[in-house]
Length: 153
Image 1 (cartoon, rainbow, N blue to C red):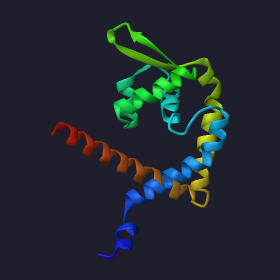
Image 2 (cartoon, helix red, strand yellow):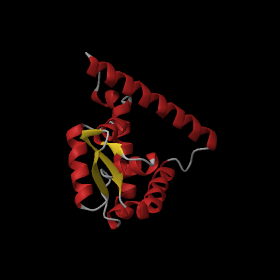
Image 3 (cartoon, helix red, strand yellow):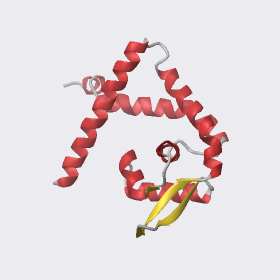
């Protein structure tokens, strides 16, 4: 099988390209806010959940390795974007929540991310956008299920 064929039928290749383009579209506005593209998922998850989350909850929700999650949260804490407090119900756990500094950025973050993703689907009809979202949700669900099954082996 010629090499180009594998690439032309590869979902992973496309997802990686889309991810990099999406990051490039928002990187400038985010860096002005003092945030990197890899930190955004943590901030958005905390802002959207509207309650403190454990590192494990963040790691699982975002499908990001616990060690990488810890490193990102260390950086965000140093930058004053999150605070960590001991969970009164489980002393071994830390609860992570956004700081007022992050809450002030919420509008800018949402606007920037929506702008970036709307650019990617600008020439799609509303029906196409809806279909694409539902297909992507199914891909995510399949991936989460497969990952869970792999971890249970």
